[in-house]
Image (cartoon, rainbow, N blue to C red):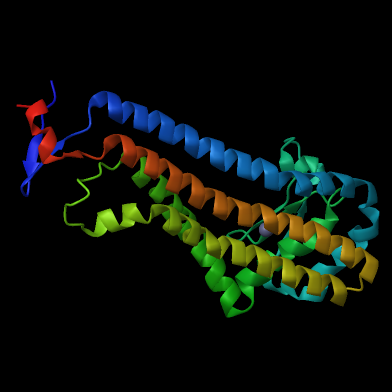
Length: 263
Ligand SMILES: [Zn+2]
């Protein structure tokens, strides 16, 4: 039995529980498939090269360790934590990742495996501690990612109104949730790009040779691609799940010719 209702002179059929479930599962599946595929596709070249860098770490290690002083970040309290001595066998200890922790001013990196990535991490520290635009971008990262997360929530959990109903603020957010999710990821992309740019400049200043810098640029472009892909993937995933949810759950207008069906 369909409970149709009238809204400003038109007759509508609301979505059924079954439609809502279908929309939710298909929307969620599309979300993870799109985001997962994009991230895997974009992440592969980067992880491949990073793994290869383990074998030629010695070419970068001394310059990297020296660059902390060259950058002046040591005087600002930044410290490098050599993760090769860590007892926990996580990604940092294994040398498949490195990170800068702004709160503690710590750079966690396996200096015996991926010193090449260290310049970029120092770039993050510079963004955070020196210069305004970098600081602003790094401050916008987490709010941006939170907004992107909220947009995925909105895409899957909000109930759309009839197409003809007047729109409020939330409806406008919902209509543009894919775009908003993409845009909210941009501070992260720009901050990453800026960290790489500063890292390359610092490597040069610390005396790293041009062929090594060239190799480093390759790795850093691949890293940036993963962040761009995350932003694009997020936008597409949120947009697609929202469209699927709308398709299944938006109340459908009944054309007047079809009225007899429900009377
Ligand atoms: Zn980074």
